[in-house]
Image 1: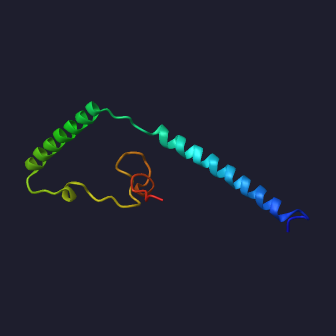
Image 2: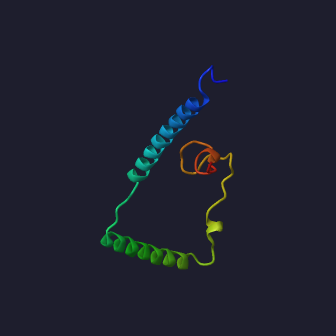
Image 3: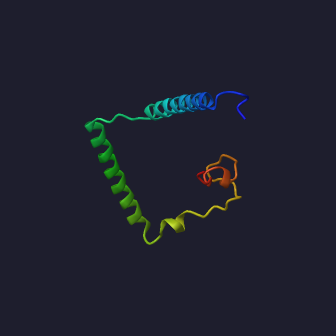
Length: 101
């Protein structure tokens, strides 16, 4: 199976190749994660929290003005094969209705 080669050397060579592949994958994943890191200062976090509170308050006022209607009544249900309401021209199931794989 190893073409008249020493099996121990073949196992070592295969292990080394797998280890190098693992290290390369690890480098790629770490780089990908670090590229998406957002640094936040305490001032930025305070501004974000204040904006969220303000948005929640305005949303609460909007809901009070709506009366007894619920979110399910105001947003029509879109069928999977219907065109996506975002206007992309794709079917809903291939656009915003896509299931996470």
